[in-house]
Each structure stands twice: as structure tokens, then as C-alpha cells.
Length: 484
Ligand SMILES: NC(=O)C1=CN([C@@H]2O[C@H](COP(=O)(O)OP(=O)(O)OC[C@H]3O[C@@H](n4cnc5c(N)ncnc54)[C@H](OP(=O)(O)O)[C@@H]3O)[C@@H](O)[C@H]2O)[C@@H](O)CC1
Ligand SMILES: [K+]
Image (cartoon, rainbow, N blue to C red; front, top):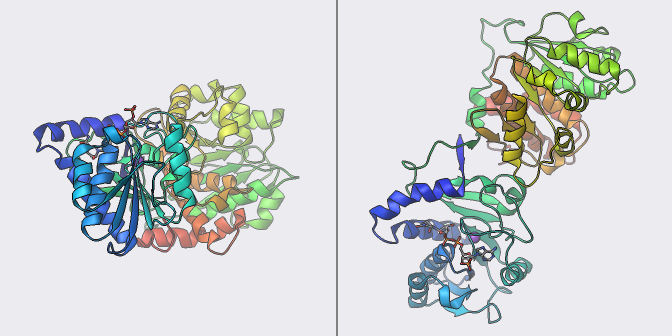
């Protein structure tokens, strides 16, 4: 698991190391790590052109010291000082000694010919949208040819929430120090960070237990145990699905297929799309009746494409009245947003899987702090909330939140949510704790999307077809080839 930390946590973890000295040691570690990544990205230093954008804080200091190391190896380094009187004095002196040049924002910045641009405008100390002069420099850097490398985090990105108010540095790579900041993997921060490289500056012993984490392929593989000889179709968990309608059976077919392909134990379907499901998946046990007619299950998935009429409301209430884990998606979310006590009154686990508009039906917009929003709704309802997005978030009333790291923009297409619900339902029925089931499902769904997208634009059925291979690769530990 990769811990995701806040700016305050990182600063608190640095404090004892800074006090223990020697002065500047942490910044040297950070700058050396940064220069090492830059060298790897450039392939060589000699003859390359590097422009460092330097603010008045320690983030600028990192950029100056790293720039000095690159200059010492033969790079032509220009430091553009946003506030010349306050630039890190020791860093500036080191850069000059190494042969680096210094310019103001209106001077010869070298941005039009740079091989690499270092963004040292703001790091953990940045507040709000970038100021106009810094924003203008970022626009010029982005228009030039240089590889865009952010120091610690892209300037203009909130380190905790990933929110961007105005303009932020659009990095292709971010070299971050001590811990991955949550803002690098969520919201707009994720779009601005590019590939994240973590430099160890020795904080492992002083960082607190993270309040948010990202699962790795190995973490997910450990939650996807293959069946053993002792398993039968019941012991692997039976999932019940209520979805779709006679006129629109698609959601039911996708959701049932995803559940079958995730854990081919037993999948029961109950509802008016029965004929469509039976035709698509003869392996499922299908009834036109109510959930109570379906037979024994270990978890329910309710909602995709079922409509929001009184009949649907009755079915949702019937399922929520059981003492089984229940996943609520799509139309079921609209229905429970009108009667949230149906969720609050439960003792068995409940998982809700809203996108932003569905989330807002519970009374508050998601806003800029997506992890915080998911946590608040989870606490209010006493349920697990899977908030869909470019980085899907899973929050429970207690325990760490999960920020998903897999996926592709190609997943933004009809029916992919129905597939996610089917995967998560199968994992709930298999007995995974609700938040882990939801987070594992989001990871697998994203990997299936990446695999499917290798073949061009994807449709939701492609995900179902790719699930066996996705799961096999994750279990084999060869996430490589599935993309990052
Ligand atoms: N502690 C350590 O030993 C280590 C720290 N490390 C490094 O230090 C970084 C934190 O440094 P920091 O605290 O000095 O703050 P930093 O991110 O440079 O920003 C402050 C500057 O930004 C300015 N500014 C603010 N908002 C702005 C805006 N919207 N638009 C434009 N400007 C804005 C603000 O201006 P002011 O408000 O003062 O006028 C001030 O000049 C951290 O991220 C890591 O890189 C590593 O070396 C590891 C060891
Ligand atoms: K930065």
C-alpha cells in the first residue's frame, strides 16, 4: 500500500529531522534525488538546457541546488527568479558557483529552447491559485519544448486535496519528497502531476499512519485469492443482482456478466430483465420475481437501470431490510437519497457508488476536497462511499480512505459503472470487508479498462471480456503490461 499524506503530516515528520541537523541536510537529499531523476529523464547532462522557475521559498531552494548539480555536470542551467531578493541564498550561490545563469521573468529565460523545465515556484507552502506573474511564467513554460518536471508538487496544486484554483504547472513528471502527497493522486492534481517519483529523504520513521492509501497490484492480488480444491460454488460466495428492466436489459446483462467473470461461483438475478440476462448468461440463476424469490445469496447489488418508480423503491427497501451486505448503484442511489434512513438503520455493510451528480442528491456537492466529501457522506450514512472520478475514492466511516490509481479516460462511457458494481458485488459476496471490496473492484475495473483500451476505444462489454485476463495477470503479479 502506498501511504498518501497531507502537507501538515509531512511538515511534522520533517521537524525532528530538521532539529537534529545538520542544517540543510534534508534539502540536500531532496535536491540530489531531484537531480538524479532529471538526469535519468534527460539521458545525459552535458549540453542539455535546463530552466528552473524559482520562487522565494524552500521549493525554489530545491530547484536551485538540483540545478547546480546539473550545471556541475555540464548542463546549461538558467534560474528564473520570481522574487530575486528572496531567492534561497545558499542555493543561489551554489548555482552561480556551478556556472548557472540567473534571469528575471522578463529576461532571457531560455524557456523557448529548454530540454527540461524545473518548477520550483511553490511546494508545500503554496496557497490558493498561482499569482499572475507566476501563472504567466507557467503558461510560457508549457508553450515551450522542455520536459515539464515539478519539484515536490506542481505549483498551483493544493497538496492535500489536489484542487487547482486558476492555473497550475502541468507537469509530465513530479519528483516528490518524503511521502506522496494526497493532492498528487486525486482531483485536478492527478491530471497535473504526470508520473510521480518518490524520493526518500528519511521520513519513514516519523510519518504518521496514513489516513489515505493507494492499493498496488500486489495488494489487490492478495485480495483475489484463486479458488482451492476445497471450494464449491457456494463457498465462493453467491451474489444476487437486481438491475435493468424488460425494456432496457443492458445494465443487468453487464452487471451479471461482470460478477460471473470476477468469481464464477454462483450469480443469481432477480428482476424484469430476466429474459435478457438468461439469454446472455445461461450460467446465472434467473428469476422474474422479487429478490426474496431468488434463493440464498451472500451479498446484493441493486440499482443499475432498474428505474425509480414505486416498484423499484419497494425492491430497494426489501433488499436493504436484509442483514446482508448490499451495494447500491445508479437508480438505487436516487431512491435512497430520498430515504437515507434506510441505509443509516442498517447494521450489515452498505456500499454506495455515486458519481458527482448522484452524490449531490444526498444534500451537498462534492466540491474541491473529494476525499473529504466521500468521508463526510460515509460518516453521515454509516456506509462505505465509492465516489467515482478520474481517481475513484473509497471512504468508510472509519479507517483509511482508498484513492484508486488505475484506469483510463476511455472508461467514461455508458455501462462501465454497471460492470464496476458487478465486480464489487462479487467481492462482497466472497467475504471481503466492504471498503476493501469496493477499493479492490475499482482497481481491477481500472486495469481491465487499461487492457481493453490497448485495442482502441472501449465499450463496457469489453471490460467483462477482459476480466479473466486482468485477474490472471494481477494474480501472476505481472501488472507490468497493464499500464501504470
Ligand atoms: N522543510 C525542509 O527542510 C524541506 C523542505 N523542502 C521543500 O520546501 C518546500 C516548502 O517550502 P516553503 O515552506 O518555504 O514553501 P514553498 O513551497 O517554497 O512556498 C512558499 C513561497 O511561495 C510563495 N507563494 C505562496 N503561494 C503562492 C501563490 N499562490 N502564487 C505564487 N507564489 C506563492 C510564497 O510567497 P510569500 O507568500 O512569502 O510572498 C513563498 O515565497 C517543500 O515543498 C519542499 O519542496 C524539501 O527541501 C525537503 C526539506
Ligand atoms: K513546485
